[in-house]
Image (tube, rainbow, N blue to C red; front, side, top):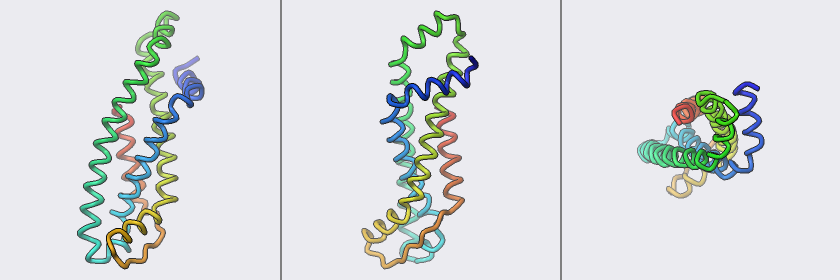
Length: 168
């Protein structure tokens, strides 16, 4: 059994363990996408009064979200690895090298990240108009919010979270 198939099997068997972790990361990706959609939405940003507030709010919130998310992901990754020390020990006793064990857990983390990224983008895209309408209402702006999916926002979210998932 190679590392990829073992990681896939472990991911499938531990989905219930990772449910909360994946759900929180999915929400974080969705929120980050919504702020990037605000940042890249050409029709919303055409309004002069929105331009100043929206760009700065989107940038500040995205940075704060990323900082909190990186610390959360780092902590929960180490927590899940500590929870699975017995499993790692069994693999070591079975003669699997530390490099292969690390590769298996890295591939499993990539599966978790891809699941959260796909789910987060899906929810972010589905609820982006609602988010932008609520934001416009809260800021007392009279703006018609169209439903758009800026490819630049999707690309930025995928690159940002891809880097974070690979780094962790």
